[in-house]
Image 1 (cartoon, rainbow, N blue to C red):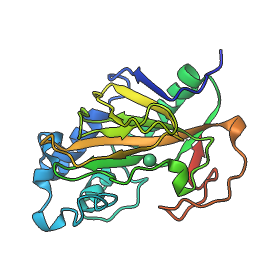
Image 2: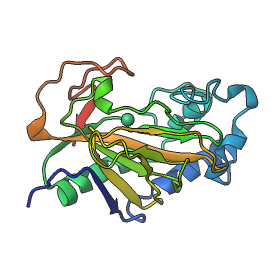
Image 3: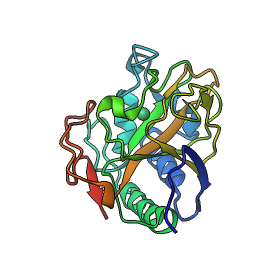
Length: 232
Ligand SMILES: [Fe+2]
């Protein structure tokens, strides 16, 4: 049976097998003595908070701390990078997606994106389609919450391309969303009084991959295997 593309599909995964939450907790506890990851904002010095509530959270001090979870990410060296198998686990998850969900060979975003949405900030406020940033339309987006995601502390997305009926994806750790990359999505100002953490990444059927020569608009790397993408 082959996977047929749907606009929005929410799946559950085995949290014991893919315990991303445990690794994030371990990393933030060890380095910041942060006990509750939903209180992450309390561990960021005032002057290191984003300057702009709409755009300022794309990459900030808090991201530098979070991306120190694995040496694969570019390190700002504020804290020492943890080596606790985060990317190894991510690759295991890709293998699961390839074998159990898509039942096809995949290429995937080499370094997943980690998102932070502090209370009273957006994560990325501009509503967009990933193709607005040169992403190939062949990509399939995966969004995986680390904390729960609720209402304004979530991602808003339309249900069909062009419908603009934006609704928040209210999910818990243990669920993930597969979504059509042509759907418009974005974030609002978080009024929920906790920090939302999530990760997202893109996969593509190997059969759909042709050498995409355009570069990412946000990172100066090409949409090619060995640059933006990796294979198992
Ligand atoms: Fe996006």
